[in-house]
Each structure stands twice: as C-alpha cells, then as structure tokens.
Length: 111
Length: 113
Image (cartoon, rainbow over all chains, first blue to last red; front, side, top):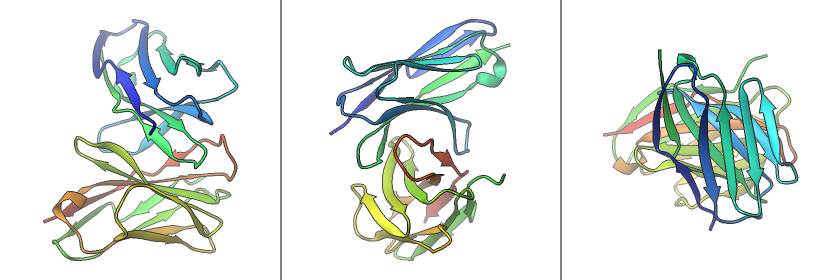
C-alpha cells in the first residue's frame, strides 16, 4: 500500500526567503508525482506534475524534483511571498489513476 | 474556460438520510474523480469515472456510489449517512490518459447532524 509523507508539517518563513518542502513515498511504481496547493476551505490548485521518467519540472518560482529510486521529491520555492501562504500537498499517482496524498505542509510567509 | 464546478457548496443532512453531490468537469475532460477530505484524515480517493464507466474505487463502503453521465458530468451519492461522513468532498477532472493534470473544484462541504 502506497504511503506518502510530507515534512515538515508546518513552516513559517519571512518574505523573500527560499524554501524547500519534502515529500517521500514508499512504492516507486508510480506514473507521476504531483504538487498542489490548497487555500483554506478551497479546492486544490495543481502546481507541477513530474512524470516517472522525468527528474524535475519548473514553473516560475517553483521547481520540483523527483528521485523515484529513493522515493523522494522536493518542492523548491524561490523568493517566497505572503501570497504563497497555503497548504502544499504532494501526491503520487499509480496505475489505477488513484492519487495518494501526503498530509501536507502548511506554509506561512510573513511580510 | 470554466473550471470544475461542484454543487451544492454546502449540504446539511441528518443521520440516515441520503446526499447527492454534483460535479461538472472542464470541457474536453472525460475523467472525473471524487475525493473525501475529512478533518484529520487527509484526502482519500473515492471513485474514478471515465467515459461513463466506473474505473476504480477506493476503500469506502458500498453506500458511497456514483455515476457519470453522457456529458461527462458526475454525481456522488451517499446513502444511510453517518456522522463520520461529514467532510469536504472534492471533484476533479482530467483528460483521458495517464500523466494528465487533475483540476479540482472548490468542493461540497457535507455536514451530517
């Protein structure tokens, strides 16, 4: 059974700082790994999708890496802004299209 | 382009009743997914529909069921509601095929009293 762990559970940083969120998974037989953000009481917004054959994806100030063999992914956020404050969720997708989510990292960027 | 829309936004029911939640996917998307987000339990996969067929279901009892219509919209039915069914129910859609991004709606908050 796939299990996804995210560390840390919560993170508070001053504006402008670069930061790294971590995600680990137990079963390397994945189709892809996805990063989402969730604002309070809202749905999820897709940030990045890394296919199992890829090593990283970039979008603006976000960069996600994937090391499938070790079961790890990181999300790097450059020059953080208060608007980045949200819960960040990592999820892996298996062959049956089921996304298994981690419990998330709650990020607060202080002005 | 309209995103994934879910209705109703909030739903209040009592134990034993039935709830029906609706989802309209993004135009061109044929896959619809349902997830439950209960307090303290994280996001749990419920159901996946594609081209009108149920393709996969998560570890939930049979009183959670649904369907997908010819226009690819979907509804989730929860029978014999229990207090622990109180949660945010999220619908997502994607194009068919693997490695397609999922786009989520804002969810239906179901409260069972």
